[in-house]
Amino acid sequence: MTALGYVLLCLIWGSTWLAIKVGLDAGMPPLLGVALRFFLASLVLVPLAWWRARAAFRDPVAWRLALLVGVASFGFGYGCTYIGGMYVPSGLGSLTFGVFPFWVAVLAHFILGDRLSAGKLLAIAVGLGGLVTLYSGSLRELGPDTFFGVAIITSSVLVQGFSQIYVKRDGANVPAAFLSGIGELTGSIVLVGVAGLRGEFSQPFPLTTPVVASIAYLAVFGSIVTFLIYYSLLKRLSATLMAMVALITPPIAVLLGIVFKGEKLGVITLTGGGLVLLGVLLFQVAERRAR
Image 1 (cartoon, helix red, strand yellow):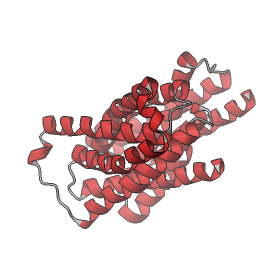
Image 2 (cartoon, helix red, strand yellow):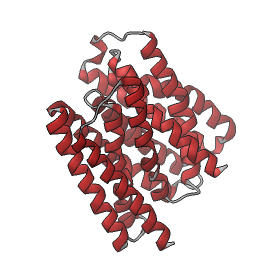
Image 3 (spheres, one colour):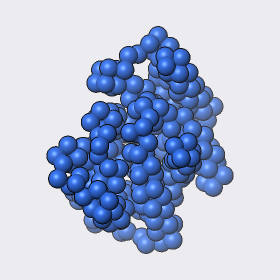
Image 4 (tube, one colour):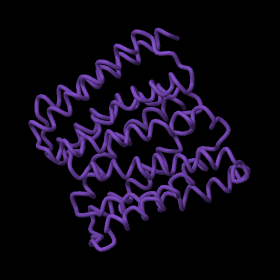
């Protein structure tokens, strides 16, 4: 079941980048769109948590982690992902997020005591070289707006890494439904507040088929199904191995972007993405050797 959950997680998350882009291209306000996505998902997850794990609602550790995930990951992190997604092709967004395992590994070194071997450091260096190449390619081949989008998504990576590490360290007994449900509800509240400051309430919210389909797919599959799987697996697998999902989802996202959106990435951009994924692969090999 663990292997099946891991594969399903990769397939769904590989498709979520395209779903986000479909909604944004159809005029969906980014922060209100993701806030609605998480709010709808929380309507299922919070009652599920109350039914299956009521004790978590009296656990201060569970609340601390859920609020951290809600603010850092579902709030700030996904807010940046959606705003960045306005400026970049869906495949490029996923490739940029491929550096997530390296950041998690660095945090795990200092917070969890997972030592960085020479092989891991080499892999991180390759991945960071790929990120620099991505930045160069996005600026030269796709324009300054795309470069800006890549920078925003990178900031999402940096913030979300912290919440994953602390969940791994302290969340062994926190039910996935509680962590996801309260986290997504908290994130939706944060996002609504920031959307108000950004002036999104004065923008039209088109309830067209692409927008509704995007929100519905992301709420059910991208928020309920995936995060129940993700936080369940995070308790059984290493934080770095879970972050390796980033090795598999980018090729899926790039392929779907080409097929359904006609996205085109330049040679430099694709080279940078390839280096990022090579670094992730090398890191996985180094971790297996360490074990």
